[in-house]
Every structure is written in structure tokens, then in C-alpha cells.
Image 1 (tube, one colour):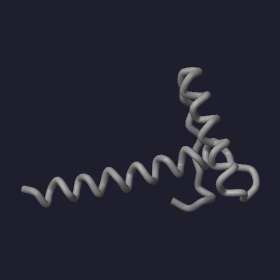
Image 2 (cartoon, helix red, strand yellow):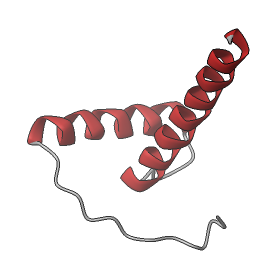
Image 3 (tube, rainbow, N blue to C red):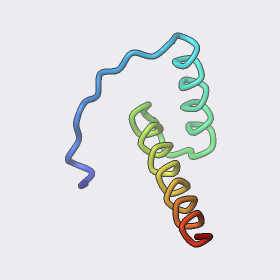
Image 4 (cartoon, rainbow, N blue to C red):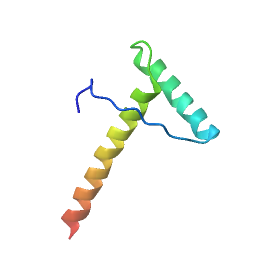
Amino acid sequence: MSENERIQLNVRISKETSKLLDEIVEYYQQGLKLGRIYKGDVLTDIIEKSYEVMNKQKRSFTKRF
């Protein structure tokens, strides 16, 4: 998907999860020093990395059998 092609997700999360996300965004902000980091960008990064890990695990699992 192109960077310009975005959709909006409306989700409900707990206050605790929101606080955790704020902390992660702050961590990204401090670590990257690229200017303003948005929650959507952080969530995208987390999802893409999780997807990569999932696929590696799936490949590893199928190699065993």
C-alpha cells in the first residue's frame, strides 16, 4: 500500500493501553529525532514488525514438518 493510501481506523482501547501507546510514541520520538512522530506511524511500525515476525515463525514451523 502506498504511503498516500491511508484509511482511518476507529477503535476503542483501554486507558492503560492508551497510556502504553503514549509511552511508546514518546520513546520513538526520543530515539528517532525526526520531528513529530504520530501514533498512527508508531502503530504501523509495530504492526509491520509483528507481521514480519509472524511470517518468520510460520516459515520456521512449516520447515519442521
